[in-house]
Image 1 (cartoon, helix red, strand yellow):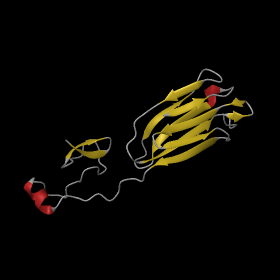
Image 2 (cartoon, helix red, strand yellow; image 1 turned 180 degrees about the vertical axis):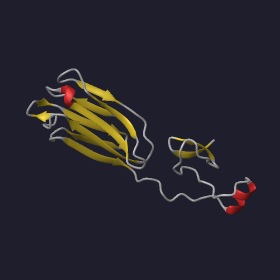
Image 3 (cartoon, helix red, strand yellow; image 1 turned 60 degrees about the horizontal axis):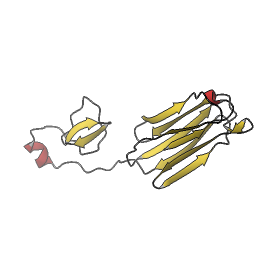
Length: 144
């Protein structure tokens, strides 16, 4: 969950949660309308590494000269907060990226009639790429 409390200039605030493993933006928000207001967004994350990045368009952060703005990021086992920065602030959270995933054995590949090496579950892929274990969703091979 991401909570933003705006300062006197809410339209200057923009933030995003970036998946550090594949570069995709998992959540984003900003350009708020109301001063000194709490905004809340929530999302579901895979167990990977993420970066929360918040930017202030004017470069004076969200606390403390022009109000008491802040951010809070929470989940079951996470609590990050801040607000005092200039142009931007960022925080890393989550676990490491999945890189060492075992692949299928050659006998499994031959039995499926596939000539080239078969991808294992959770290997990075593109939407039009074949995944032996299922289909490509959210840039990972997934089992049916």
